[in-house]
Amino acid sequence: MAPDLAAFRAVARGLLAREAPPDRVHFDEVRGHPEGLLRAAARWEACGRLAPAVPRDFLGMTRAVLPHRDPGRWALLYRVLWRLTHGEPALLQRHEDTDVRQLRWMEQSVRRDLKAMTDAVRFRRVPRHGREHHVAWYAPEHRILRAVAPFLVRRFASFAWSLFTPDGGAHWDLERLTFAEGTHASGDAAAHAASRARGRSPGPTAGGVPLMLVGMAHEGGDSPSFTGPAGQLLALVLGRAGLLGPTAPVTHGVVPCGAGCGTWPLPEGARTSCRHGLDAAVARARPRMVIALGAQAAQAFLGVGFRIHISRGQVLSSRWAEGWMATLETEAIVRLTGARERAEARIHLEADFRSAAAWLRQRSPGDGVRPRVG
Image (cartoon, rainbow, N blue to C red):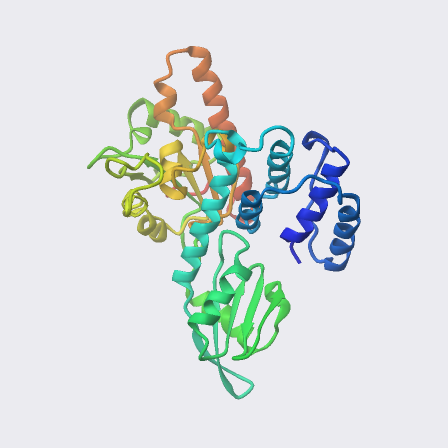
């Protein structure tokens, strides 16, 4: 059982009642112990009956951000709640605030994942206990199974089905929707059939490349981060991080969408046009990890809400690859006029690539430290 909105509200109210500032609070997710979690929440709620009222807008945002996989979301939510109840009641209207932007980005990421999952789930017919059953497998970016399942019940109410994800399964028996934690929760024929279906539909790493680099490109041309002095810097840093094999790197450039892409809210169709061809290129490469070079390349994946200065160098799970990271753009580094600025940026870039190499080694111990770059 993952922490839910009721548990967070209870704990947060207790913390506010104790006047516990965010810099003195550390949040740890509790999984697999639902009774203990609820008892702890009840104790905190008892301490928090005199806590300030929680703004309704904040509750809606918390509910939307809840499925996000970033464990730091709890500390971020409490920090925003503290500010809302300590002199900044209009904080959520300040769209340029760093904390608010991060929450909005998380909310957008979850909403995109919800849309992608509802569009992508396909059920297969399989025998189960002498009856016809349908199964599907999907690996969402976030923990959205419980949010998506009721929609699937409405869409596929006429047959029994099981949907399996890395986080658990949802089961519809024509009368009741139930959930089970972990893909091991059901050992029947449907679960095995889902595994076979998953095997017939290779994921990002099956037969693909370990690493794919994505940068922004000029119309009809290659990305400047992959050519000239910027390309030389990229090759040098990749080599120092142990990410260059005997073959030349293969990269992908994304052409920016047209006028209005950087505005908010996005004009209709802008997100699709900005990623034109990107999804297909990633699907062909089937990388274990994707690294986006620069803010624009990262936003081509995650939308204009992504802020590279907040999430640079963090390895995130995504629907494109098991690992996804955004780092600095080499073309922007070589254009820096100050020698000290260039040196610091190069240090950050190399540190990000070393983190990526370590991540790949952990997941491909038999492949060595020289993956192909696709």
